[in-house]
Image (tube, rainbow, N blue to C red; front, top):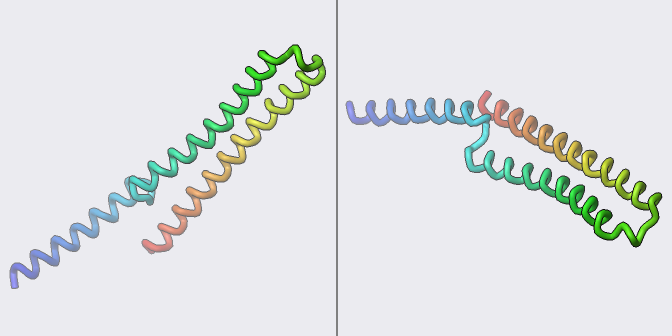
Length: 108
């Protein structure tokens, strides 16, 4: 009988600790959170790489374009890359919020 109570109390403590760990990790399993963060960083890397590569492209091939075309291209990428980064930020912010709301509903 005592061993059954010990086993039950261990199980109960384990479940409480597991619940605390979920709260400490932001309602996500550590691996999932790391993967999401890597995905988000990769998306920002795409935005910064596109901006930098376009600027280098116009720098090295400026002899092929008129000044107006270069200004137009630099203006476009200077607006498009931050817009892409903003959309990525909003997407992941909403995704994290939706996952947290789902976890809260499951816990409640």
